[in-house]
Image 1 (cartoon, one colour):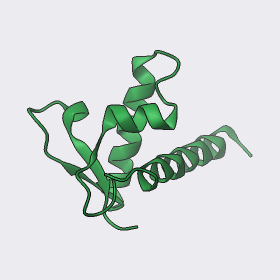
Image 2 (cartoon, rainbow, N blue to C red; image 1 turned 45 degrees about the vertical axis):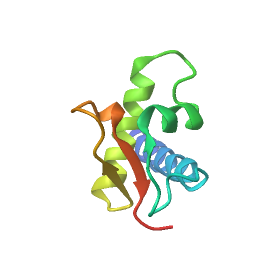
Image 3 (cartoon, rainbow, N blue to C red; image 1 turned 135 degrees about the horizontal axis):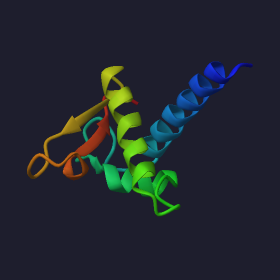
Length: 91
């Protein structure tokens, strides 16, 4: 497996991991109130190195999933993406 393939595989794994986190949260279902990006990152273990970039990575994975129609973003307070909730579009 070359480096490009490994990178693609890592992205697929992260997307599956974030979806699993959302499926396990009671507010992240299709009719739920949504879960803040910070909470998704915390539950996914993408904050534990105290690195802003890991939380950013979680945000980018959520955006990938949004473009694929698997999650939707709910408007929060203001324009800060971290203050917007995310939920699954379907189980």
